[in-house]
Length: 140
Image (cartoon, rainbow, N blue to C red):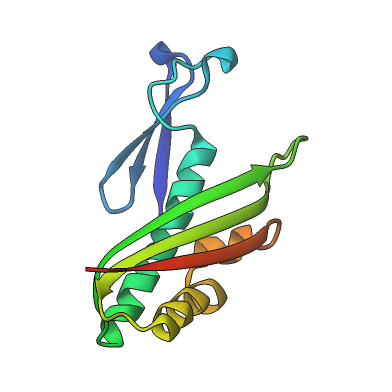
């Protein structure tokens, strides 16, 4: 894996990342830090990536288990340390999984497998943060 991050020197504290798969991702800082608040902060992208990583796993595990999943939303609430490095210290993920006749046991197991075995981002953040999860199932 690779990624190139370039500071956009004419745009305050904006950065443009080009991923190894050829995609672009913009990041910016807060106004009080010299940024212009035009894109997510770098640590917000870490949070979003963690949510994407685990949601991907959950949907894939449910599909492989022949569950009729039609939606997955992960709402993440996190705290960071007050001093540098301001690592995540607590992260709670609430999943809302929708589908037809979804098994509560299957959804619970998919979330557990993601966090204990498959999600690389959760595994890394779990080294510094207390990780918790919850879920709701919506029929439809």
